[in-house]
Length: 189
Image 1: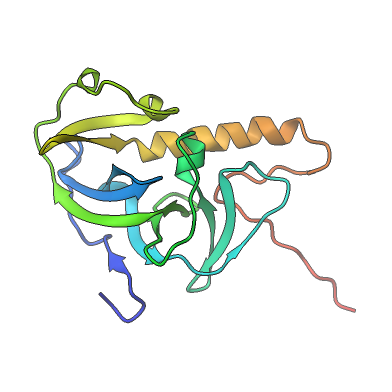
Image 2: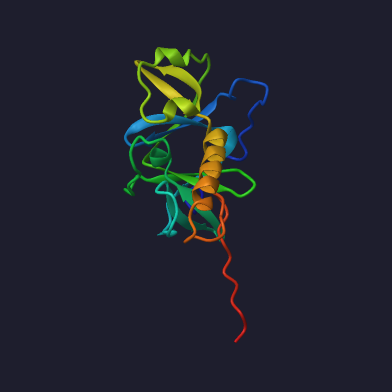
């Protein structure tokens, strides 16, 4: 790890023509391990101080400053309706590469693995909350299944949900989509 305690992922090659590329970050959401394709991630970081943003969805935990870049911190456990993120010494955030990068708050980083031969999602008896809507693949990992989440689809739906919610709120004013933080302009006095 580098001096700023991050695991840089941007340099890992993936092959676009494959099912997922094989590299999967395994992380906990509400105590259960889920997979996140490396191809969507820029890095894994400790969670810096979080500034809450009022009048937003409960899954939008706030914003963080990562080496001068302001990122929206999303609680995927709340977004998937499977629980809620709580900061612990093991908490990390997965920085997702998008036009405007965002970060996903995770309970614990379990590691990174190379997974091949996905199994049918129907083999998983029960997927809690809204997880079934965002399954990209399922792999057998010993005696358990590893559900790999479609991060891009999850964040696209979060943007759409945010748009619908803010259109109905007259208190909030202009909509700020996920990954966008309003800039407060200060006049010279």
